[in-house]
Amino acid sequence: MRTQLLKADESALSLAAELLKNGQVVGIPTETVYGLGADALNEQAVLAIFAAKERPADNPLIVHVADFEALDALCHVNDMARRLSDAFWPGPLTMILPKKATVPTVVTAGLDSVAVRMPSHPVAQEIIRRSGCPIAAPSANRSGRPSPTQASHVMEDMNGRIPLIIDGGESDVGVESTVVSLTGDTAVVLRPGGITPEMIAAVLGECEVADSVMRPLREGEEAPSPGMKHKHYAPKAPMTLYAGEQTQVANRICEEYDCVQGGVKPLILASRAHLPLYGSRHVFDLGPDAASAAHALFSALRYADEKGFTRIFSEAYPEEGVGLALMNRMARAAGFDIVRI
Ligand code: AMP
Ligand code: MG
Image (cartoon, rainbow, N blue to C red; front, side, top):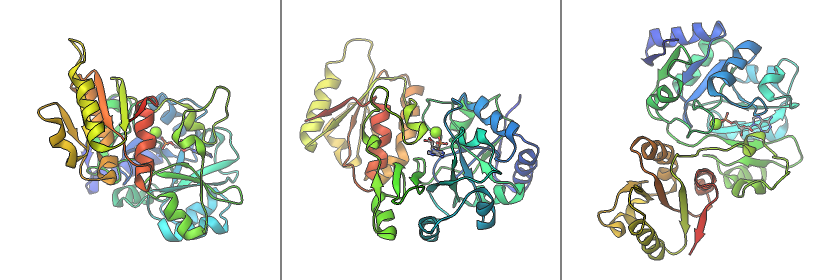
């Protein structure tokens, strides 16, 4: 299959909508990361997403809508959902709600709940509206690869596997949406993202965070969100995170960097203010703060793969605000290899 990569102009948007109506899979820009979209109500189309991504069938997809009528057709909307959607939609918040029978079980991997989101990216909204269907869309990477934040990343992973990728520029947030379960009495964040637990608690009065967010699952433990049991965001090079007082962290990273064996090509991931601490060593600039680091992380991991770095040393960030989403992705990329100094 030939894969077209088109800028998001009028004719590209019509083509995307046409393909989606016909049960095809299209790469779509959103404000979080690029998605691999298909008609959520067409079982064959949804199966084609799993095939293109090589995604395990037990990992459910998020369904994207452009309006509230479409939402009502998919799930039972409760009071918490109404308040959160008022506050944060359209935007990077996915809500888990009891599903209606219209949603095929392939979408939810057999669960009786469904994940729903209204994206704020104007191109995503336009494509959903024109296609006339709710769009099931996981991140547009092959399973186990970093999520794509640029159209070129999608091309790297999906060339020859899908007919069309729409280029809508770089994703704004850079990490996937916050996933919050609203099926119980209290909201529980299953995956942190751009909308923080603090922001959700400010609307609902309280918000829990699943404790598996910042640690690996134990042997035999059931994941509250099926996606968490799968390996995620792994660069080819082994990666280690260093947490602690900044100059001590930098000293330790420099030591490790300087004593790698011949043939090993090390890369440091660091925040902008700390760049001078690393001298002339090879450093990827994660920008001034946790939000910029979240935005840059997946590009950094792809850069490391592409340029053949074989060892990654990264600064850790405080696990608060958007730093929780960043560290959730970083810890998984590092296989939870975290050195506390
Ligand atoms: P992705 O499509 O790559 O953004 O991943 C979607 C995430 O949402 C995965 O971590 C899924 O496990 C999670 N998810 C989707 N549907 C549900 C659901 N019904 N219950 C719990 N988690 C879900
Ligand atoms: Mg994903």
